[in-house]
Picture 1 (cartoon, rainbow, N blue to C red):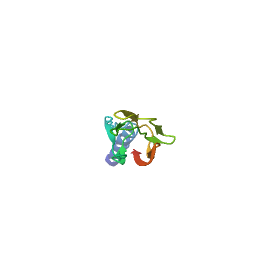
Picture 2 (picture 1 turned 135 degrees about the vertical axis):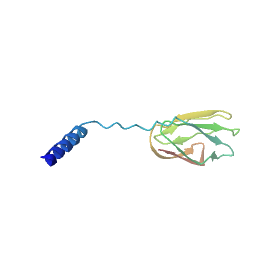
Picture 3 (picture 1 turned 135 degrees about the horizontal axis):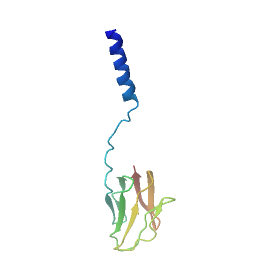
Picture 4 (picture 1 turned 120 degrees about the vertical axis):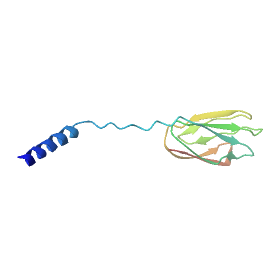
Length: 113
């Protein structure tokens, strides 16, 4: 009889916990960060950048002439005049090759996780 009572008690405990929703604490989301790509000497620096979705990338043109930062179908800064900048909020995950359409030898990569 005692064994039946123990088995019954264990079954009740197991049944009650099986239907209790588990509480799982979610990791806090990382705050968005702003990253800078400097355009100088007809180069993007850094040439390769990895960011998280939600982060912002700012291209700053320090050359005395205009440039662009263009990844077909993803982003296009249009003309970034000398001494000006352009911002892009990374919302789409992937690895994107970009170029200055005015100086096609200028290339960069933006990886968004």
